[in-house]
Image: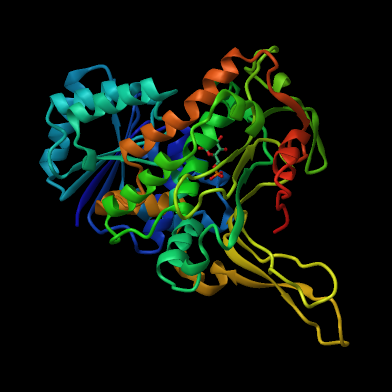
Length: 481
Ligand code: BG6
């Protein structure tokens, strides 16, 4: 299958930090289809060779194991081309179409790695010149909208040029290997399904913690905040994967229909529930990896009186037969104690214990970051003496060891799927709009709440109120690996 992959925003951060390294890995592992051409599009004038040198220089920022050797880069770079485009000029789109038509590749993927406010304009122009035929797909990066209204507006404008199956919305968390393994665990194995319900599960926790601050993205972040940046998309997408019913098939829409049902079943937030069940925080100065780090309010391009949240913890429930009454706790934040993304399924304790000591319930931990893997925590007897207390042990699955060379990273997976037209891991517009619908009351309540976010010290697990939120139900956040 020959392809043309067009990267709008070809000199931007996303392209060189994430997309190029992912494309290189796919190429290195022989996974990129033969006959490919990658055209980076940006505003300034430069030759193909100058663009290749620009990308080569940026690879120094990539993990050394994932960096190309010189000869490898030279071969990979043959795929790379550069095209200057002013995104406001129709004739530049016509020129792009002519270049694509001249080659006649089987598949054309237009990846919009630009600022989202340009999406409607780019999609309209692509549609106007006819760069929206059946073999064309467009990939949209988040943030898709700022609230429900703006998300709907973007979706309407994208839909005027591209059908739903041509518009691929990326949530890069869905590309993470652990998320695919969650699907495999739930629907490729019979073991857990009978336990995956309110009768056996006490609570589910989703933590997306980062140790970094907002860095150079202060301006963007201050207009966004943790609820929009991480909860509305990544955390809710993970929640749908954990909580969905078994789909009738592996087809994209069968899966996405089930995910949408979960989003529709989330308990709507009342004003009282927001005050009680949602905690927002903002980091103060503290320590990260032994270094003193500044407060959010001291970061570049952040207003000194900003009330933007850098931390959110919330409790919700899913109102259906499988999950009624089971708390789902979601938590995310910048400058927390560790970079750690995990889903913890806490099972109920045994109804009656015949062993001395603590009756510690089982838990299943799905680690997304820093390493991906699965850990099932059990209790076992050491067998050293009679009537001994049981000891915690874990069954530990390290996917890197199990599958060694065959691992595919998040963006790599999503790019390969976009080229192959496999939509399972892309977010449908109705899912995305439903997620906005659910978070919107919180955004509204915060606008009217003058208390602002609670301070927390950098390098900790967030405001104490986040622990209290879980403790109220008799639970604690699980932080160990
Ligand atoms: C992005 C957010 O979507 O995800 C960033 O905009 C965040 O603020 C990033 O840092 C986290 O992604 P990952 O894959 O590094 O956990």
